[in-house]
Length: 271
Image (cartoon, rainbow, N blue to C red; front, side, top):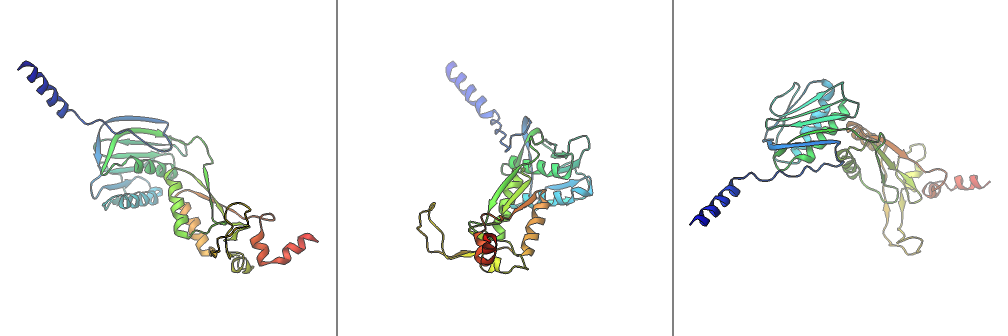
């Protein structure tokens, strides 16, 4: 009987024990992470506040992220909030440095600039598990000033929606420079109104080689380009997420697409 009582007590103790805290996984790994006990529940209409007009667009992005990632309708207030998500500027922090403090009552994100506050919001997105944010204290700032990724649309054209999706993935991981590879031998993707042939001829090809220098082709036509209006739209979209766009235009090498449209340029180069 005594053994049965001891076993029952052990089972009861195990049942009453709190579940282990989930591991904090954030990419890139923050400089400092101190996890506590419990979690903050976002709720359906989690308020988002900010203490400076410069954070209005960051708060709007935060609300959009929460709406996309759950059945929520966040309420944005142009003032600090105490029970919800509070965004603040802190001039004692470096330009890209932020702190994130999550308690059972809410989340406070402070940054040295609106850009840094958005980095804190991206970390918050990665912390959310269902409708819960673990109690945690995080401090972080990037090690490298230039943090870029290249998107090659010359060899294979992607519509604007896919380009923006790529930018969203960059923003989630706190990258700040978008290298947009717009032209190469395989295609010219940017509208130049003074030279319409670049997009009329240079943006299209009858088929694509399979492998490298195999002389075997897939027989599938390929093409597409971005208008100047679309280019401006993508640049503005990236800027809202504090990402700088660096367009790459190959010239004079890797310019077969341009030469297909204007063969005279090739002949002039040979003279």
